Amino acid sequence: MSKLLSLLSALILVLLLPLISLSQYPDSIRLNDVRFLTSHNSYKRKPDPKILKFLSHFKKQLGKDMDPIQMDYGHALLSEQLNTYHINGFELDVNYDPKGGHFAKRRINFFVGGLKQKSRDSLLLKPGFKILHIADVDYESNYTTFIQALTEIRDWSTQHPNHTPIFINIEIKRDAPADYSKALDFLGFSKSIPFVPEALNDLDMEIHSVFGAAPEILFTPKMLRDTFSSCKERLSTIDWPAMNDLLGKVFIVLDGDFNGICTKALNTGEDRPMFVYGQPGEPETAFVIRNEPQGREEEIRALTDLYMVRTRTDAGTLEARSLDYSRYNAVMKSQAQIITTDYYRADPLLSPFVVSIEQFKQNTLHLFLRSRGF
Image (cartoon, rainbow, N blue to C red; front, side):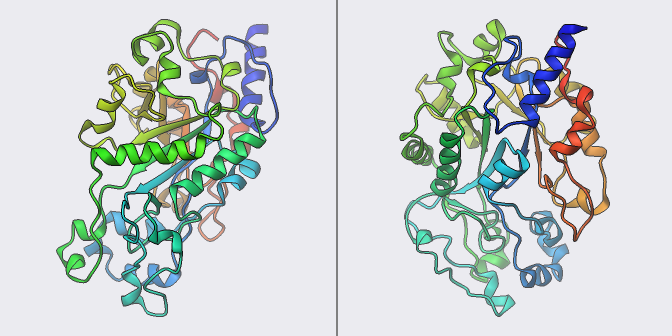
């Protein structure tokens, strides 16, 4: 009983006090024993109400991806999420723009009226990955470039050197509205730029350009492999590193490994800065996505013994609008470690729906204790 209480106390501290310097945990607590609250599309600002109203007239034709109801959410700055809401992870959508200028146009504004059709942000004209949700449509972002967002995270990490680990989920945006609609293509909406193998190198370069100034922050696949031949061998043999050894670290995990480009790169043994979400059993898989937790609770729970599993408590404002916690409850039962939400703070225009640190306090036993002999 005393072991149970000491482990529980330490785990509560890990999640509830992420900004305080905690120099010691029981050595038995590994990274995959702890659950982290993270945000989804963490850079995003709400679209202009005029755009949402315009899109609402064409909901059936546009499909779910451009449903204005599901776009109507936004986030605080990354540093505010860390400081105020104790968020320990972010999702950043990266859009490939090797020549610059591809995302400066906001074509939908031509049809809405009263909004500028071209951004005055000079950073959009420069080469590099841009951060936005849907080209031409849902483009409002707290950060223009991938480098801007990474820099804010790096600076915060440097200022809080003993923080609990931070997870940066990178989603490669592979399409744009004009890619799947001939009508939108005809009306002048932009098509996406294909993510080619060279783009992965460009992504690596941007990460190194930011974290090269503080290389001790990043925890890479090579660090996890250590002396083992693969992540699988390391995790199967000696488990994840202890929490004590990961204070102040940032993990970057890539979502959207098209044509196996990223997995092939990792398998070369190079020290790339990013993990890649993979399938259980693959040599380099350390992180797994199961965004739909309902009906998969036991599967996810079994995966957490070896992997870090990401899932979502809500999606597209739907749970918030209906005050529906069924998905949240499935996440709690699943024991997935990387818990992603758009509602670490409630939107008073929708409902009191919230997935917050304060709410986690009500689920302490259920939240922290996993089937690992604790």
